[in-house]
Length: 137
Image (cartoon, rainbow, N blue to C red; front, side, top):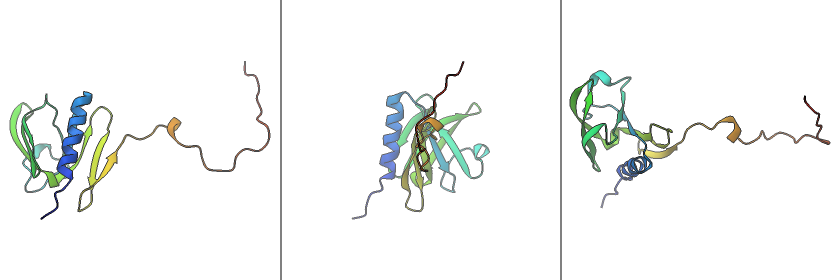
């Protein structure tokens, strides 16, 4: 028995999380000969698709491919994206989602960059002596 890939299940899970959270799910795709998207919108062999409920119709997310119809420049197109071509899925609003890398498409959690206040302090020697405070007017 062949082993099922977790990738289509993870894509559907992040899509559902986006929908439940009120976020807009975006799909990043590496375009290949099996990917059917409008070529005019492909940049450097990649395309990012809004697959939110307000953006596409008849969305089907199967184990082999993702299909729907969507409008580009006011023109309706039938889209077919093989699951193998999916680079990642993420929420537009906060960038959280999942990125797939490598030949076996292992998932890597995608999170927005931390701001400076969330980072750990540098791991250098601790200051010596008593702290010095002064009144600033």
